[in-house]
Structures are given as C-alpha cells and as structure tokens.
Image (cartoon, rainbow, N blue to C red):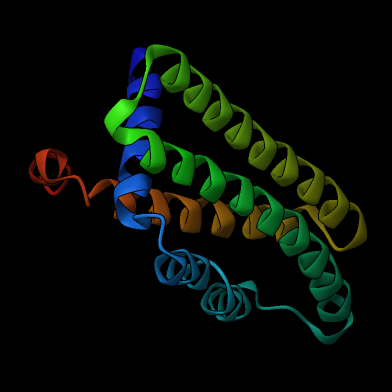
Amino acid sequence: MKKIILFSICVVFALALKAQSSADEIQYLQGIIGMKKQQYVAEHMSLNKADSAKFWKIYEDYELYRSEIVDKRLKNISQYVDNFNTLSNAKADELMKNSFSIMADLDKLWQKTYTRMAKEISPVKAVQFIQIEMYVEAMVRKAATEQLPELSKSVKK
C-alpha cells in the first residue's frame, strides 16, 4: 500500500513538473493521449467490418468521458503547481485525495467500457482494448515520472 501511495504522489509531482501550468504544455499532454493514441488503438485492435462501427462508437463515448477525467487531472496538477511554494499539509492532502479520486474515476470508466464492449462486440476485444488503454496510461505516467531528476536514475535501471 505504501508503494502505491508513493507512486501516486510521484505521479502528481511529475505531471506537475511536466505541465508547468502553461496552456501549450497542457495541449501537448492532451495530444499525447489524443489522436496519436487513436491511431495506435486502430493498429492494435484488428477489427472486422461488422465490429468496427460498434467499436468506434464505444470508443468515441469512452474518449468523451476520458477527456473529462484528463481535464480533472490537469486542473489538479495546475493547483499543485500554483501552490507549490506555499503548499500546506491541508492542500497537499486535498490534492492527493483528488488524485486518488481521479484514478478511481478512470478505473470505473475502464470497467464500464469493458462491460459495454464485451456485450456489444466480445469479451476478447474488450480485454484487448482495456489492455491497450492500461498500457497507454502506464506510458504516460512513466514519461511524467521520468521528468523528476531524483527519480529518473532509479526508474531507468
């Protein structure tokens, strides 16, 4: 449990450093998990014609909700950056609880999407999609974490 908490704190700090609260970098972060990700998904799903239309409708709905979660995450990061020099225990606690809530929202979205996709297409395709999403999320978190100079040496080992 301590490792999960430490990792979550590192993610918040890393994303805060990466975001730097500038609009350009927020757009960059959204770009990483936006259109390029859709192309990656298309390449790895191997959908037949019948499933393709159903899949992309589900994907569109998924991305709508996921973008709301990303917005919450970016707002939380911006609050961290804005309060970095004056961060109180209460504000740090609030931001970390927000981070946990955001991660829970993403997990719920994955569960909801898996259930819908398993029913409308197949459990196999649903598993493949969720695996892709988990991989992309892990890569985003890893890239952000590596921005921390004191962690970059140990992460790259």
